[in-house]
Image 1 (cartoon, rainbow, N blue to C red):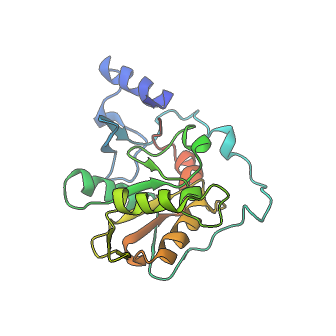
Image 2: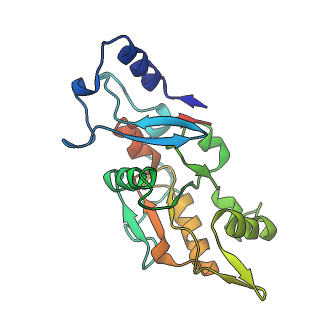
Amino acid sequence: MKQSAWLMGATLLAAAGVVGADEMKVKVTSDLESVTVEHEGEEVEIKRDQDPDNRIPKDYTQTSRECPPFCVQPIEVVPGAHTIGEIELLEMLREREDGEREFLLVDSRTPDWFEKGTIPSAQNIPWTQLHPESSTFDPFVAESLLLDEFGVKKEGGLFDFRDAKTLVLFCNGPWCGQSPTNIKALVGMGYPADKIYWYRGGMQVWHTLGLTTVEP
């Protein structure tokens, strides 16, 4: 696992006594400096970049993307699902680390995007694995994900979603349809919409705010 360069640099500075937690100038909110999560067995502190000269990666500076497929997504993907922002996601992550709630954070992007960096603790489940119209869709893979990753049970040939996990999905940003496609596919299979949360801002807004990313 590789953490973003600025986070590694900040860690070194802190160790040298140059930067301390009480000196953090760029917080998430006035009351929230950071949230620590576990990613691939290691603790990662999610916080905003402290370097005023930091800029977002080139992949996310493009503002003109052909629609379709890169159309601006609505606030509500499907009725009953929850749309959240950065503060809500960070609070959910904090509550999960404190044992107050359980959910699976899902990066719905294709692996090539995921490998460029993701939100700490996210699991890559590309939209292509769940959407029936994807050229690479395999119903056996989709069923395995439901049963092995999402906590769905199967009885008498039917899926039982009563104990299904709460899911938080995201992709590249408000113009990206990969997580909305995953959400629609899951609801179409019978997944309860009220167990699905959508971080609409995705990686573009995450980078714009200078929040920590990790590379798998």
